[in-house]
Amino acid sequence: MEAVRIASECISTFQGSGQGPDRESTSPPRLPEHGPFALDDEPAWRAWRAAKLADSLPAAAPEIIDVADLAHPSADEIARLDKALARSNMALYRTAPLDEAGSRAAVAAFTRACGLTRFESHRSAGADGIVAIRVTDAPRQAGFIPYSDRPIGWHTDGYYAWDGADRAIQSMVLHCVRPGREGGVNALMDPDIAYIRLRDRDPAFVAALMRDDAMSIPPCVEEDGTVRGETVGPVFFVDPATGRLGMRYTARKRHIAWRDDAATRAAVAALVEIMADDPSIVRLRLEPGMGLLADNVLHDRSGFVDAEEPGEGRLLLRLRSYDRIALPPVEV
Ligand SMILES: [Fe+2]
Image 1 (cartoon, protein in one colour):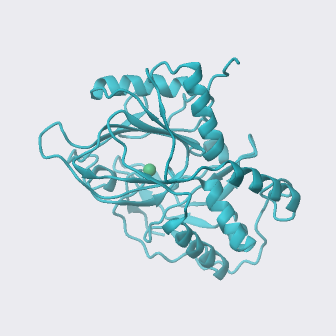
Image 2 (spheres, rainbow, N blue to C red):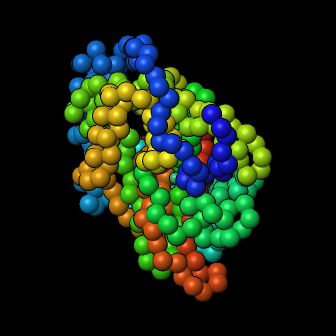
C-alpha cells in the first residue's frame, strides 16, 4: 500500500480508499476466555454491566470538581476525582484561570500528581509533554484539523497506533486556557458504556470489534519524514495489566480500513448510531480553568469561532500518557 503523508494528529487531511483489505479469513476472533469481556462468561458480564450502569450519572448534569490549586490537589479533591474516574473513566475539574505559562506549569504538576510520567512523544509537545492546541499557521501544524477551527469527529486519542495494550494511550488531560468566542463544544463518552450498548444490541458486534484485525490504518509519512507502517489492531481490547477495557476508534471515513466483512460493518454502523445520541454522552464547553482528566475516552469537538484579537484565541493544553491514572491514596 502506498504511503501517504500525515502527521501524528488525531485528524489530518490524508487520502484513502476507505475500503478494508479483502479479508476472507474465517479465523475466529481472539476474545477473552474469562471475565466480563468474555462472551461465554455471562455471570461476570452481567455483574460488571449492572455495577457500571448503577453507578452512572445523568449526563445532563456532569459533576465539575473544584480544585483550588491544580498543581497540588487536596486529599478531598483527589477523592472526588477518583470517584468520578471510577464511575465514568473521566473527571471534569475547575480551577482558577491562569495565563498560558501559569496554566502550563499547573497542568504539568497536576498530571504528575495523577501518576502520569510517560507522555506520548509528539512533534508538537514541549518537554512537559503538553501540546498547545490553538489555531495556527505554524509550519508543522498548519493544515491539521486540531490546529484549525473545524470540527473533529469522534475518536480516541492515538487510535492510529497499536503495539499492544502496554503501548497504548491510556490517559489524557485537556485543560482550557481560553475557549474562543463561541463553539468548541466537546462531547465525551465512556468507552465502557459504548461497549455495553453494543453488546446489548448484539454480542457479535463486540466480538467483531475485538478482533486483532478489526481496524487498519494505512502507512504514512510524518511531516518530519518518519515513516510509520500499516497499523492493524482491535477497537476494544482488554488491558492485561488491569483487566480493564481499552478502546481505539476514529469516525474518519478516509484513511482507515475496517475489516471487510459484514459483522465489522454492522458493528461500526451500530457504534456510529450509539454515539449520535446516547443519553450518557456529556457535552460541554470547557471554560477558562476547566479541564478533563480521563482515561482515553471517546470524544469529539464541534467547530468554533475564534477570537480575532491576537493572543485571545482558543487555547487548550493537551497531554496524552501511556500511564494509567494513579491518584495518590487518600487517608480516611
Ligand atoms: Fe483527541
